[in-house]
Image (cartoon, rainbow over all chains, first blue to last red):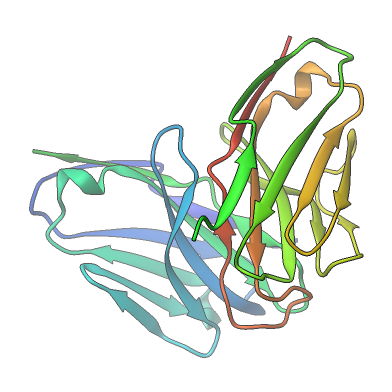
Length: 112
Length: 116
């Protein structure tokens, strides 16, 4: 069974800092990987989707990379803002599977 | 374009009561899913429907049933609620299931269920 791990579980940074969130997965036979944002008491908002054939995806201040062979993905957030404070979830879809395997998330706090 | 809509947003049940969580999507997606989210556990798949007319068990199906009413709607039923089913329930949809397709998932805003 695919296992997805996100480290650290929580992170606090001052506003303006660049930061990296990490995601690792145990089975490299993935179809794609998706990063989500979850605000307290809210649903999940999709941020970036990386197909298994891609190395990275960018959206605004966000950049997600994928190293399938090593089972790792990173989410880079540039020039962090207090509005970026949320929990960030990484989810992997295996080839031939009808499921997303989720990590437990990294809770990010950006201090003004 | 509402995306994925879940009702109700909050619900308190007594042990043994039954209820149905409703989910509808307006994106013409083929596949729909029900997840539960518990502290420290991440999201776990309860049931999914790869296409209209089909449903399959996910990782934690015990105590639940589902109905894919049509392409838009996918409901989750708790026949006899238990305190262990206290959780936040999310419905999601995607363009294709079965490990094919190139699109990601869209999630609803969730239903917070408490069983006392």
